Amino acid sequence: MTRHSGFRARCRALLSKEMGERAGPKPEVYLSELPIGSKVSIIIDPSTHKGSPHRRYHGRIGEIVEKRGRGYIVAVTVGSKRKLLSLLPEHLRPFVQG
Image (cartoon, rainbow, N blue to C red):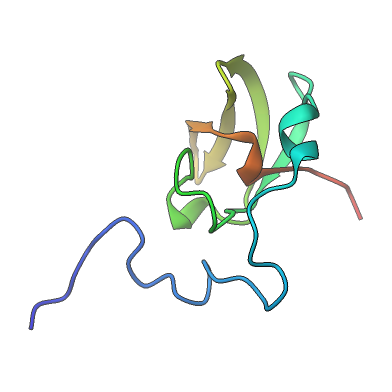
């Protein structure tokens, strides 16, 4: 059988939740506004498929460039390139240095 190469392939451990966490995002995620220019960490919420980035961006730090609709445009540096990702707020967490 051939290897599959879907968008969520080889992500079983990355996109699984612990017991007791198997619910969707909390309402505070949608009600809180992230300011433009702030740093955010990209953490994929596996319960929401829409607006999620590719698994290579999981755990990366980015900067919010603009708000577009319900989501945000986030700039991430990969190597020497600057990439723009369109993400929904349930996949973003405010970055805390420390």
